[in-house]
Length: 454
Image 1: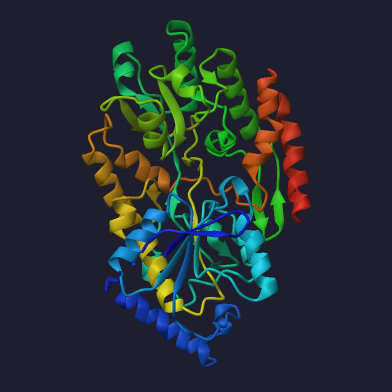
Image 2 (image 1 turned 30 degrees about the vertical axis):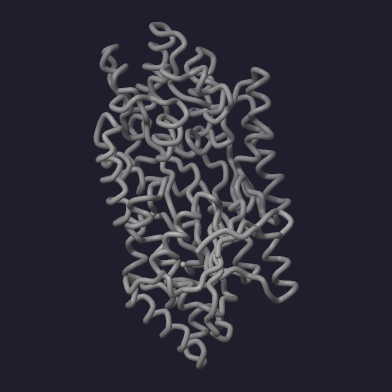
């Protein structure tokens, strides 16, 4: 059964089930871990995680509308597994719906899903203290399987060395560009931020109206400032963060953005705004952005024809020997510590994050699990849409996401949208708003119980 979870908690029925022996070894390990904990074995080694009585039964999975296809495919392949698939908002835009419902379930003592997808990367900040999510690297998921994730991909899921979720996909940033225009105008794809700025200035003078990027979205700082190693929110402990938005790294990138906003090559219109496609289709020379820009922005929103869009590594500052990129999105899967069906829950969790059938062939975003990412990239190449081989830059960027930008309980996107975006629309410079941005981050962090350092 598939159902939709409405904001008021109601459900609307939909569809149906199937099973595979693909993960027999994983399931065996899972059962061994549960059995050991049940008889008082390594419970202490699992941070005191003690599974509830294992009764089996229907597997309840919560997904957003995008991941519904994954749950339904698993059900189709595993008809012997009774499933209750519930769709909800996936905590999109930091809605906190999952946290609110778990708080209710904790009070009533029932209702928790066995496995849940979230579009957010910071769910462990509340889910671990609420004792909702089970530790995965203490016997539930084999280490050799966990080693397959891209370097740093599961960092948002780690709390004091214990893994409490699995990353679904990555949103590492790269430089997208129009290969046809680059060739026609005799330009070279920039490798450094200095070259990027210089080329954007040439575009402003030689081809006014064409763009080098966009700064109109709430995730703008995750593209540029994160990649530029701006220490806007470096999480230093479970409830500790350092915030320094006026550092040279922050100011340097903000100044570059201000320069290009002023000359018109960076638009303050968001890529998903109602007029973006109408105003800018065919007029983007290059654009730094996440892995999913290729499909969501260029192919779907801008309708750029096949064979034009290429991918290059994210620009780096000259002399910086440690390449860094930002990250815009990517989701996580959590397994409930209250699950009475750990066998089926672990089976599904492993399949949905690693299976080529879904992650490699159907998932819209770049899979966090390395082997599936190779299949995904091969499928992208076989589509014939891109002007070059996108695999090398995307694979390199997957391991270059700068670790100094943390995943706090507060939403950086919401803070930027409320603090910086209005100023941009009023004509203020980003450099002038950096102190205000810092104050806003610090205030939000403190309201969520963080100690804020300089």
